[in-house]
Structures are given as structure tokens and as C-alpha cells.
Image 1 (cartoon, rainbow, N blue to C red):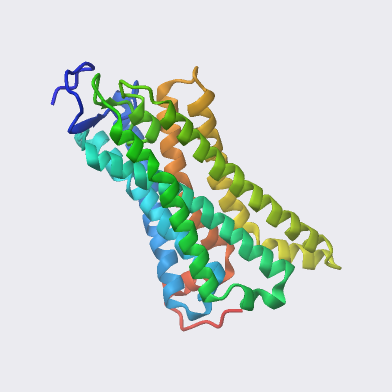
Image 2 (image 1 turned 90 degrees about the vertical axis):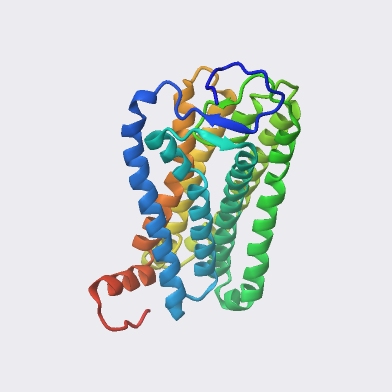
Length: 319
């Protein structure tokens, strides 16, 4: 298929992913840190899943949500990074139209799911600190399953209109996507039609998910901080706040890049295109890479179990 910018088709059977526009010569070098980060993300999240599955003392709400976060991270980075690396390494730029829309759905649905899981983890921390005596009765396995299912359904339902709307547009000018993946606006901007519905919907959903979820997290942590500062000693306050440390780091790792990416794509018209594309890939890869490191280092039970695996010691008693 020709890589020309002008074609005479009505609708494409395939799209051409350009990679990082303007940095084609440097893509092979850019691929090295991205590949390392992807390997760390995959290994780290699989280790988290293995540890929680094999250690019975970790079978609780906090760790169930952590497993959901690990699965979401694995899907989020795996649906984009391998294709990106194939573009950089093998010049494999073509992607089927249906596969492109499927990738679009997975990117946006699992992004929303991850945000929802982080909110669920904030609720778990709220109950554990503000009402510890009722934690086991409030967050039963049945309740955790219902919360998890609702987060999955929310992400899927919010993301589904994006590929459905993108599918109905006519692409009569070009099939070249100036991106490494089928991000929603990168695709619909190629349509020779009025795409305001897609644009407004994408912007509304992104703002709704980010703003609402950050609001609920803020409310939870406001109550958590009030409970912590009411504790009688400094040591008790530090110890209790320390139980939230890994979750707070995960919040920062997810929302700060996400907010910058949304702002840059919507209002940063003078920002170079290669910066948009690079930063979008960072948003998809950095949280999945950092989350297992954050929770592995800061969570004593996981850290001890990990050390046990690598040092081949006998079973430990987790406190």
C-alpha cells in the first residue's frame, strides 16, 4: 500500500501508523528505553499477580484491587507497545481497520478502568483507616467483586462509542495516522466529515472520568487525613499514613501524566506533534511500569514474599 498522503479510497481497509512524526531517524534509539520499560512492566505485574495468588495472607480487598490494577496495566501497555516496537524495528506500519478500532477501544476502556480501580483502592483505604472495625464486613469478597465489575463495565461502556463513532465516518483523504497507535482523536482527525460529535464526546468522557475520579479520591483522602490527625501520637500518625503511601504514589504516577496528555492534546496547539506522540506513549507505559515497583517496595507483605522467592528461604510469618 502506498504511503502517499493522498488517496482516492472511500474507506480504508488498513491504516498506516507513522510512528513518531519528525523523529523517524531516532526511533530505533527511542525503542530501547520503551522496550526496557515494557519488559519491566510485564515482569513486575506478573510477579505481583503470582505473589498475591500464592500467598494466602494476601487474599484481601486491598490485594484483590491490586491484582485488578496489575491486569489492567498489562492489557493497557500490551495493546500498544508491541505494535509500536514493530513499527520502530521492522517498519511494520500497517494495521487493519477493524484491529485499529479494537485497539482504540482497549486503550480508552482500560484507561478508564484503571482510574476506577484507583478510586476503589482509595475507598478501601478510607474504610480501613476511618472505620477499621467494619472493614472486613464492609468490603467482603462479594462487595469487592461488585465494585470490580462495575469499574470494568463503566470503562467498557464509556469507551465503546469512540470506535462506533469512528467507524461511521468516511475516510476519503488519507489513511496515514501520525501516531504509534490508534488513539481516538488521531484516527477521527483523518475523516473527511464533521467530527465534532467524536471530539466533544472524547473530551467529555476524558474530563468526566478524570475529574469525577479525582474528586472521589480527594473526598476519601480528606476523611483519611482527618482520621490520621486525630490520632494521639506522631508515630501512630506516621504509621497509619504510611499504609497509604504506595496508593498515593500510584495516584501521582497515573493522573499527572494523564492530565498533561489531555491538556496537551486539546489546548497545546503550538506543541510539536512528536511531543504529543511521545508523551501519549509515556502515559500508557509509565504507570504499568511504576505500579509493581511502588507496591513491591512499599508493601511489606509483598516485599517480604518477594525476598523469600529470590532467597529461597522457608515460609515466613507475615505480620
